[in-house]
Image 1 (tube, rainbow, N blue to C red):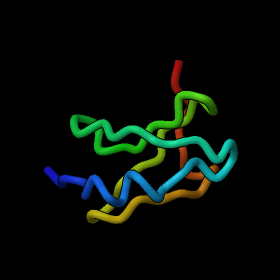
Image 2 (image 1 turned 120 degrees about the vertical axis):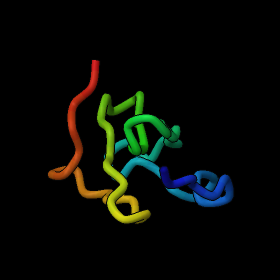
Image 3 (image 1 turned 45 degrees about the vertical axis):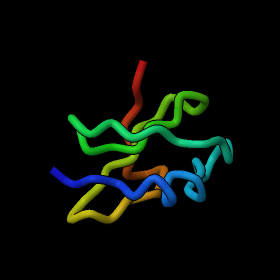
Image 4 (image 1 turned 180 degrees about the vertical axis):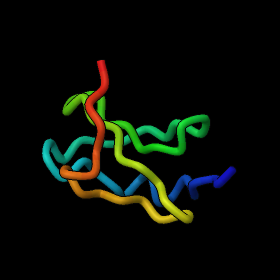
Length: 57
């Protein structure tokens, strides 16, 4: 499993709401609770495209 550098989480924001993201290690996603979207991490690289995100509850 890939680990995300905590410093990266300090600078990455949701491209829609500009809010901070949380890291879900189990699903390998960066989660924006304000946008209710989860952005995938592929090969250790966050994919911050809204079209690639999945909706969450």
